[in-house]
Image 1 (cartoon, rainbow, N blue to C red):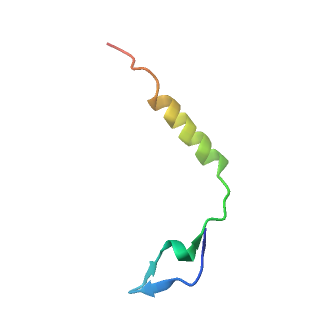
Image 2 (image 1 turned 90 degrees about the vertical axis):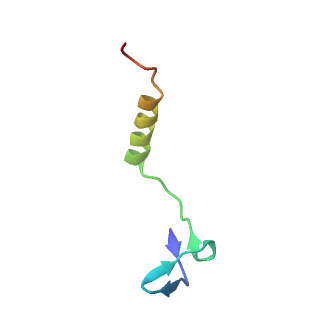
Amino acid sequence: VAVQNVHVRRGLLMLVAEVLEVLGGSVEYLDAARRRLVDEVNKPPRGR
């Protein structure tokens, strides 16, 4: 993410769509962890 020409009020960045640019990319290990979690949640219930 790139931030340009952002206003600061009381020490906080005022983030609005006009000042943000998504540069792209992904983090492989986070995506793999998300897929494992989704697979685990979608498993049928076990037990009694």
